[in-house]
Image (spheres, rainbow over the protein chains, first blue to last red):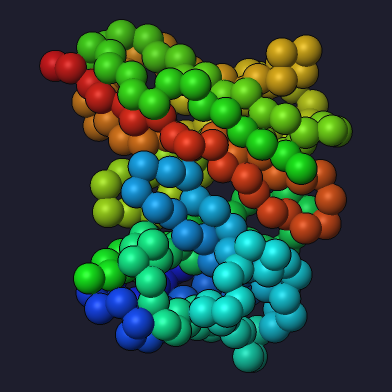
Length: 114
Length: 114
């Protein structure tokens, strides 16, 4: 089975610019997650979707971050405007459903802010 | 709210030696527990998971973990480490409800000496 696909793999932008990341989950997975992983730390959940609805976005900085999953499959995460502290790896994961189903991760997008 | 502590930031072992990585969690009920491994530039790969039942859980790549409720621990073990095991290891706790949100520890970086 194909894994979680993410693009781009790397992105370098200047502060105050905007950037978008794309994620295609494993086919049939209803639940999709975006994590932020700052260097030297564990991943931190930003937002969780169940199909095309948001389950939890309590840790998403909504003044600059937005995410959508319009048709319940692919998802995009956007940052506008970017700050220096947004430099991190952004990981997308998907699971078959909730209720303890294991999450499968993509390889991430490494974002560097200059 | 749940939390995870991985007390060891770095561990170095000799190839062929045994390994134990520590994980302590905080959660009000019986949690879902996971161990993931992350190689440089890649996403997280699931090693094993605990939901209920037998407290000794077998995973991939020869890893096992033991859930000890009295100690709030879920330590990862391997009897004989291979050079390819060098990576970062993350313990995670999932809430035992419908949300399926994971909280990760800070990770332990494993280095293997030849």
